Amino acid sequence: MATKKAATSKERRGRRQKERDDDFDYNNNKNPFSNYKMPWFGWLGLAIMILSEIALWVPRNPLAHPVAVAFTPIMWTGYILLVDGWIWERGYYSYFKNAKREWPMLALFSVLIWVMFEVFNFPARAWSYNNMPTDLFVKSVVFAWAYATIIPALLRTRSLFATFDFFDRTHPWDFKFTPMKRAVFSVVGLALTFIPPMFKACTPEDPYCTANLLIPLVWLGFIFMIEPINYRIGAPSVLRDLEKPENREFEKHNLRHLENLGNRNFEKRDLRDLKTRENSDKGKISFFWQVLVAGLICGLLWETWNIQAFWHNGLTWDYHLNPIYHIHIAGHDVKIGRMPILGFLGYPPFIWECFALWELVKWAMHGDILWKARLK
Image (tube, rainbow, N blue to C red):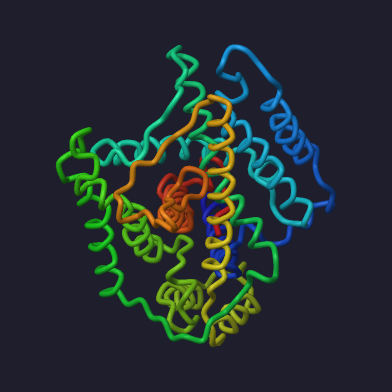
């Protein structure tokens, strides 16, 4: 019995490794069970967004519109349902159909990761909230709901773009991220992440202190810090994706390992497939196209819904970024919604760092076992 379990375990590991090697964006591979029809929750998401927009413009008293109090999380909830349904309709894997245990964990992770960013904001005071509910319970529910939608919305948007051939692109450059380079990246990431909050906290008398000036570095720091870890442990890594296959350290290691494994259940044709991929001569730049467009679109939606809630005295947020991040044209501060134009550029790296953090969490917490996550 023990021998049979060991053989089954080896076979499972072999399948998982092949899945990871097949495609960086494995979760978005074609789903044979998809019926290519928009599921009910996709239509529900669209209905939530339309009805919420209509309700927001219905005149109400008192001043604070009830929909405006939670307008952003309401819209993100509808948006997530719609986008996930659209991904299923396009024939790819849906969180709500294929990862029924994973998406609640992703929502929880989203709350925790945004609480972490709120801690980074304490000394920098780069953003603040207006018109918060006075009732502590209502406030807690609204904020938890809002935080829980952030990461799923960002990652699902990127996954949607990954289903389009336009975003499947290669590049001709010869990237090679050696252990030394990855070690340097990690050190740089630690510095970018933790140096900004080490400075004296900003005050009303000094709103643009050093911590405020450096806070955008945190959006890059986690990328540099986490990506080398994901590369090393074999989790999905954009660094490895950028390399030519012959330069990918982890894939070479696993190819040798599989050849010496002696696992009868891992067929010779699978090894030939791996070797074929090893002989491919181009790295991929698909993720950068996906995260760039997804970041800009999510940022635009975020700021649009924020300004709409502002018009109706709802829960909103303001930015207090150093003047260096503001661009003035003809005496006007150029903004998208309430966000200075240069600050808007932080959305694409924010998606990347959230992706890297989530993949690390899945690997570290054995997500494939605890909540049946599909390892890439």
